[in-house]
Length: 302
Image 1 (cartoon, rainbow, N blue to C red):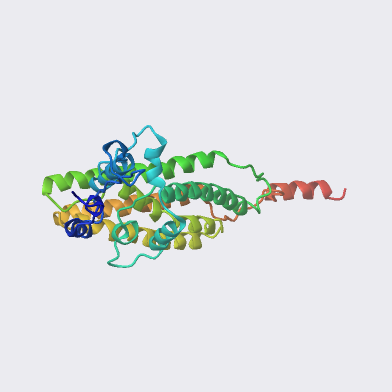
Image 2 (cartoon, rainbow, N blue to C red):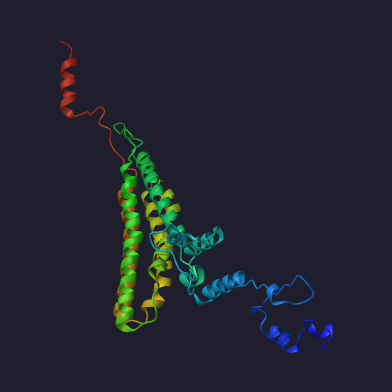
C-alpha cells in the first residue's frame, strides 16, 4: 500500500529547469480544499493569462488594430509630442548646423503636426498685427491718414501661410517619391515628415515679422535676408541627402526651387503687409506765384 507521502505533489527538477529557461511560460494553478486530492476539486483559471498572451503577441507582432481616419484616435497620434521635443525641434530650426539632418537628429521617426500647426497660426497673427502696426507707424506724420484696423489681412495671411505649409511639402514629397521610383534612389521622407520640416522651418519668421514693424526699409530687408538664410539652410541640409543621388541637373534644380519658393513667401509677406516710412509734403497751404500776385494786388494801397 502506498504511504501518504507518496500521494503528495512534489517538484521535479525537469519542471524547475524548464521554468528557469522560460520564465514567461504559462503555469496552471490547482487548488484543493482538502488534503486528499479529488478530481472534482481541481479548478483551473486561464482567462487572465490568455488575455495577457494575446495582448503581448499583438504588441510584439505589430498586429494591434489601428483606428480609422474618421476617428479622433487616428489624428491624436499626429500630436503625440511633449514640450521638450517641440522645443528641441524649434531650437534645431533656428540653429541649423552642417551635417545635422533635421529629420534624423530632431524628428527621429516621430513627426508631429502640433508644432507646425501652432507655428503657422502664430505666424499668421504676428504678420497681420505687425503689418497693421507698421502701416500706422509709416503713416504717422500724414495728417490726412486715419487709422483703420485691417482685419482682412488676417485672412490673407492665413491663406498664404497654410497653403504654403501644405501644398509646397505635398509637391516636394510627390516629386521625390516619383524620382525615387524612377531612379531607384534611397528612400525619401514621408509626407508627414516633409510637412513637419516645413512647419518648423517657418518659426524664424515669427520674431522676424515682429521686428518688421519697425518702419525702416534697410532694416526690414536685412532681417529678411537673415531669416531666409537660416530657414533655407534647414531645408537644404534636410533635403539635399535625398536628391544628391539623382542627376546633377535634377538635384540642383530641385534645391533651387525649394529655396526660391521659400524666399518668395518672405518677400511677398514683406511687400504686401509691411510699408516703410515715406516723406510726404503736406498740401496745407500751397504758395504759388499766382496766389502771391493776387495777394499783392489786394493789399496794395490806393
